[in-house]
Amino acid sequence: MASETGAKRGLQSAARKRASSRHVEDPAPAAAPVPGAFGRGPRRPPARARRRRPPIASVNPATGEMVKVFEPHSERETATRVARAAEAFAAYRRVPFAERARMMRRVADILDEERAAFGRLITTEMGKPLNAAVGEVAKCAWVCRHYAEHAESLLADERVDAGAGESFVRYQPLGPILAVMPWNFPFWQVFRFAAPALMAGNVVLLKHAANVPQCGLAIEHVFTAAGSVEGVFTTLLLTSDQVGRLLDDDRVVAATLTGSEGAGSAVAGRAGAQVKKTVLELGGSDPFVVLPSADLEAAVSAAVEARTVNNGQSCIAAKRFVVAEPAADEFERRFVDAMAGLTVGDPLDPSTEIGPLATADTRDRLEDQVRRTVEAGARVLTGGRRLDRPGFYYAPTVLTDVPAGSPAHREELFGPVATLFRARDAEDALRIANDTRFGLGASIWTREAAERDRFVDGLESGLVFVNGIVASDPRLPFGGVKRSGYGRELGVWGLREFVNIKTVRIAAGAPEPDGRTVE
Image (cartoon, rainbow, N blue to C red; front, side, top):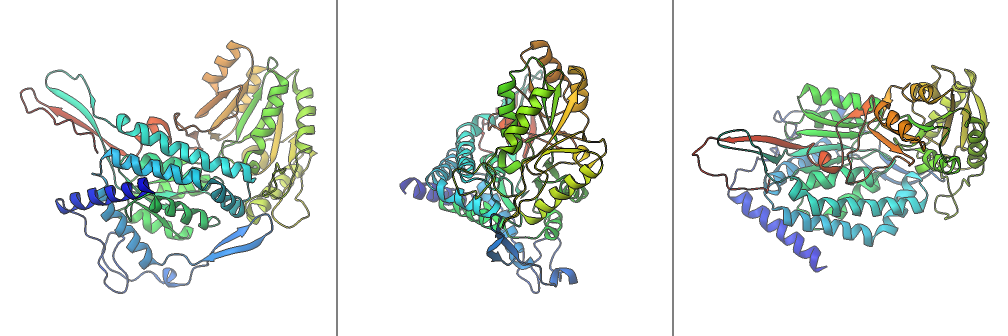
């Protein structure tokens, strides 16, 4: 409790001192009928904005039962929160790294202390097995501690030898950043962006997925309990049609989105019209390539885990299993047996390996993709159906003979459905692996150094894991190419995505720079 109180007092004190001596951007006027916090003065909202929006509902995917309902924030409420974030940034950007780090470590402590409760909340809202949900919360604590320890050194001024005089690079925060986040990792996706963004001196506006409102509010509460000044981290309960106006807001300086290809394209287009920086982490159809030299037992075990992690709802889950002859028959037999033997059930039950899909729409879309793929000529080796029980369950499924152009060939399958492809040799396997518009992650299984090097160089993806499952790590950059998005999260690369990389050149004989590294 002492650390929590001290962090809060220090952040608030620093914010007050700095705000008193510097211009703070005025919050939006409170003029009726709507405050002008969207950058262009008071005005009435369009008729469609005045209509009542549908509520934001938390539904238990294991039962289909409504858990809790929230009203979306009104335009007035949203305006107030945006203005508060802009005001908070003016002070928070000058809070020393040491105080930011104390707050971030307290966030990590709270996550560790409450990981069981937060894990249960995640499972109740989106359906992943409880042990995985608790592990997700623990990983969030890790990323907070990582940036608390390393952000200051990674953002310190960098001297550059550029001839006569002094030259250096300074990293400064940008401002309020909109984070549009998905439901599949409702804590991790937020923290892997928020921890570096906040340590860099930015403030965060979170628009979380509509089916995990309680997770979004819980995360805001964690930052508040850790001593964060009001406005530094803000959760906005919004529907998708409200995001565009936030991107138009002059105070919102940048945006990051993790989600579908369509959502990313829409956000990038709207932000681009305002010349605002975006980072997009979109879909994936990751290949899992098994070559003849691979340890087949290890590859099969990893393949099952890679396809079913998070009930199969992960951008970096392996989805296309490309096996080179002569290993294909044996791999298929073992893989199908293992997928068919998985335990599907209540995600709160410790014995459950596969829980429900997160929403009815997710289950229905997956069911439709499989049906159309089979109608196009694919064969079902196991599964291929929804389960006849309450909730949004779909059987672990393996498809083979998937025709080119079918949904399972060209689209991302978000659920426990694997597709098997046979390759003649390593070069054919590489061709099949790259035959997708996505380029997020890839996994290659081999014992041959030459094969490893060929695939590391030739795979069209942002991440390549050799003899391992693709995963994110706070120390390494994360992101994709092609239609999987652009920009990077995590590592030093993610930390520097949302900063002004300022070049400073001081002519010979000029006063020395003071070496400030706070901003």
